[in-house]
Length: 81
Image (cartoon, rainbow, N blue to C red):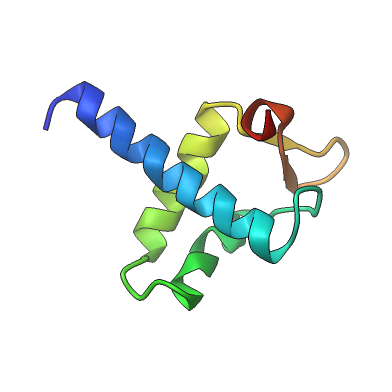
């Protein structure tokens, strides 16, 4: 797999995570890194490793942003747009 394919796969994982989170906790709820494993509740193929990769990719893409003064995140307008 080349770098472009790896990046696309990571983007897909991040999208799966964010879609799941918006459908379960909403668009504005605080998100913690531990929530990256929550898709496992509906997808038995989802692993902690995939969740961690997806969460990090969402951060790297600017799709999650830190809520000031906390250790939690929110889905950014960049992803919601």
